[in-house]
Image 1: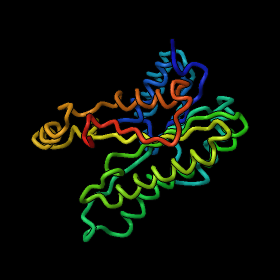
Image 2: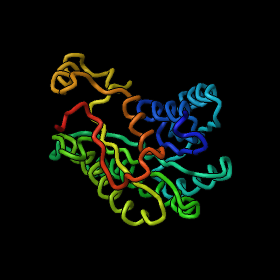
Image 3: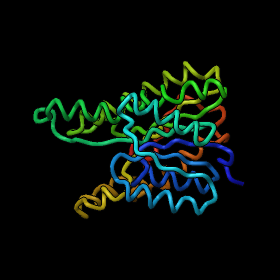
Length: 248
């Protein structure tokens, strides 16, 4: 049985990494998928083509979730193209790491704008449609860093902690309309980005994780399927750490 059959999902920042993994597993589970990308059009086209093999409707949109007007416009286009919006996965995010004493204002502002304000923008954009439907699942991507903090990432940690507070508030506001809002906090996930790290550093990370491995994009995607599907129909306002036991 396909857990997301008959549902339409918007996934932001999905041309690579975790977002690409979520889009792939959602399509495998029967969802129609609208996904966004910022600049990597080749990767987006390749993903769109590969997902169509699963027999669901898939469309890529170049859109900047950190831009309020662009987010509104995207939601209108997706509604026109797909007819409904059942799931929103706010996955777009960046890092601009530095120690606080060296961090410039622009790097703080940009991370807050892309990681946190985009969640506000996209949630506002789909809210009216979900209210009319009297159903919806909003899944926001935080991080273990947003739960416990991390030296050299004050901007990133602030943005990811803000997502948790925002999501809990949305759960309280929209729960009476059967709209759920939950958070996933990934730990050390091995993607194209981590492949560029020093192998010794990666091994040190793995050694400090109770399950002794980094996570995969599919590990995060499977958690998203749970929140997106009716399996979690009575779950809202929650943060699920998908981290191999890092925060245990």
